Image (tube, rainbow, N blue to C red):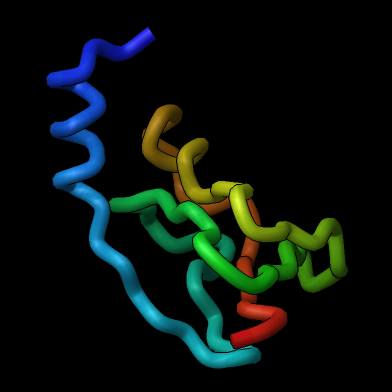
Length: 81
């Protein structure tokens, strides 16, 4: 329910980053200062060192640390380039 202006502001704040397979994007326990949208590829989520879930193009992660002002609850690793 964002206005066109609000959507434009969100889009302006997005910064693409490139990661390689096996790159750690976020690490469980770290402080969160951003969230991520998967534009292409896949990422794996690990909680307490155990595989939890695979994310795909269009998915997002990292928002909970921002919303709750808590450390990252999981580690996310790039599963593809």
